[in-house]
Structure formats: C-alpha cells, structure tokens
Image 1 (tube, rainbow, N blue to C red):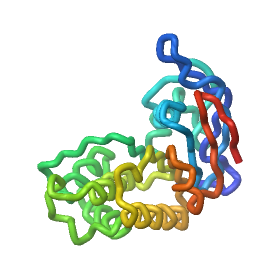
Image 2: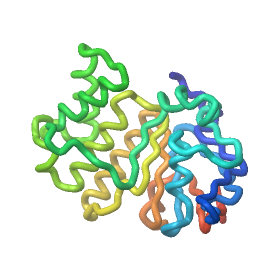
Image 3: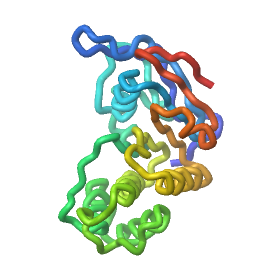
Length: 222
C-alpha cells in the first residue's frame, strides 16, 4: 500500500492503560512521521512495551486515540495488522525448523501464495544478510543471527511500519552495528521504523526523532 509522505505513521493521543492499581500509561501523546526511524526511549518499567503492545493491536487501551496510517488500532485492527511487523523483546522461535521453513511458515500464515514465497523469503534473507544460513536449523544459530531471522520474519508480508522492542538486546557490539545498518536500509526502502530502547546513546546516530518516556508519561518528543 502506498504511504503518503505527509501521513503520520503513528498518531497517539492521551493514551492511558492500567494494570489493576498500576498506571502503566498516563496520558501518552506523540506522533511518528512516515518513512522515518523513531526512537522510543525510557528506563525499564517506563511503559514502552505496553505502548508497543497497544500499537501492535495486542492490548486494548483504557483511554485514548491511537491510529496507524489513519486506521484506529482497535476499530480497524485487521487493517492495522496487515501494515505492521512486530518484533517483541522476548520472542520464541521454532528451534527445530530450518531458517527457510520458519519463514515459509509465517509467509503462509499471511496468505502469501506458494509461488511467491520462495522469492520473498530469498529477498528478506538477502536484506538481513542471512542467505547463506537458509538451510541451517534455528537452534544452531547465535543470538545475533536469531535476531536477524526474527527481523526477516516480520518483513515477509512487506509491512509499512516495523515495531521493534529492544531489538539490540543481548547483541555484541558488532551485531548491534550490523542491525543498525539493516534498519537504515529499511528506511531507504520507504519503511517506518519504531524502535524502543532503554539506552539513549544506542539510538543517537540512528533516529530522525525520539520520544522519551518515564513512569508512563512523555518527557520529550521531537
């Protein structure tokens, strides 16, 4: 789907959510421009993952208006899911599968036809520099390579927006640099990248804009 350059990828207004008596989000408001890399920064427990789950249509907010490319995340959840790729911080993988089998499974789940899948998987493996690992079992891959496979998985349906929760967590310095290079390439391809981290310096040279969250409130956005 074509993304207008002037259309916000994410628009969040007065987002609130509580877990029993704990107010995880207390009136969060920010906007993310299309075709940009936006850093979502804050200490552990600030509300970053809760916000990401709302954006990914996995959690219904208590209050607020949240849209992805103009589509409301609760009223038009199906349309939103087609346009996003969500990579959680802690993700499970089918470790007995090969890299190709794993990506083929998810491509099929998105309704991509058999004839198209081989080319699409080849493209996302090339983009994530994993072509040479196509037939390797996931259980034999390093943490960094598993992160790349997980990123390839969120790309198989060609989403317009990537929601990445601490994608560099647990990676060594070289793997972090390589991941950031991949994200820059995705921006050049016209994708919007929304990336959370608790380390501001990690995103300093990568992002076009940033939102800083603390205790469920926005301290800065721009």
